[in-house]
Length: 95
Image 1 (cartoon, rainbow, N blue to C red):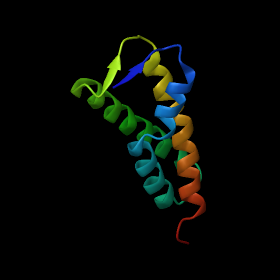
Image 2 (tube, one colour):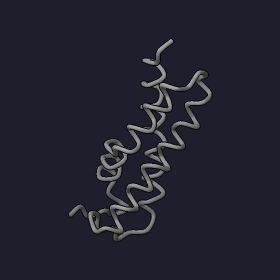
Image 3 (tube, rainbow, N blue to C red):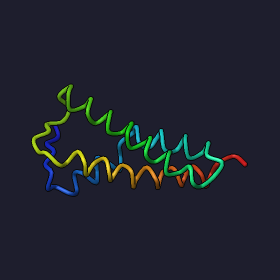
């Protein structure tokens, strides 16, 4: 079981960087984007999907969530990583 504390930045960064929902949603939406401005929408959608997966993991008992505030940090970090993944999908889209 992973213990998540709000003041442990490496755990928060790791959870945000390797969240499979963020990666899949951002890559797919980034690849489908026809304008670079849509990458922000893709990053937000990926962050929301990643947070829902994170929340389900906490409810099931996969994560031991003790602290308040870590959730906001994870959402914002997933937004940043989602933007990077969406940009990668946009760069390799079919033209």
